[in-house]
Image (cartoon, one colour):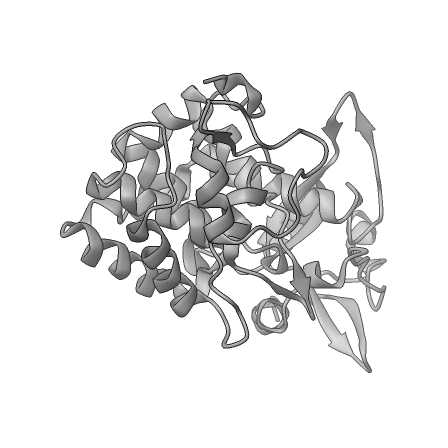
Length: 314
């Protein structure tokens, strides 16, 4: 088996970064849940011992567990066809699907199958396999906890408690409920969120619109609108890209995005007075439109905007 066929991932942070950027179908701002649901399924099967080696087969247990996840995180219109994420995770560089002679079935850069069925994949494939380092990461309980919680924070933050209970019921023990302090401080998760948000805004500050990038070092940061310690929400709609100055002001509730006459604009705290010349950087934001991502499904959520507006320092 040529495990090097999957794209190189060497640590938990790189894996989380890749998972945060999974290519998922989007319809009306709704991200289809299939790939993250399959990854949660794999974590369950690893934790319960149903998967003991780096050969993930399309077993009945895997199929039924995936269906259970789609039943919880999906919409009524979502079809729990596990074959699609099983196959197309190859394109995200998460793993590779192999045939019965251990030959890779997915050619990097283009799909050799179009929308395969579960029965068809079972006929032509023997298993899927992660790169060896990725499997080693997921085979460790602590790393698995962090990956699970990161997946939930990125794709299903509003279902966090239900998903953790679901994992506990399956395993018979609370091993997958990561300690919140560990999740707060996890640099891999935090970095993955920042990378996702900055990329959505094309590395430009949503306040002053500055865009400076030198050798992949960017002046902007991916910021939470509702702080992570309160929301455990890493969905990009809970994020905004800001330079360090405006990130500092946001964190101190001196500025906030808000809707006014159908336009998202910046409002500035009355504590930023006209008498202080050194506050000009913030005063100039008053009523200025918020720079938004090119993709509407990454726009700040109504809840996140309201949260910030309500807490503006009055």
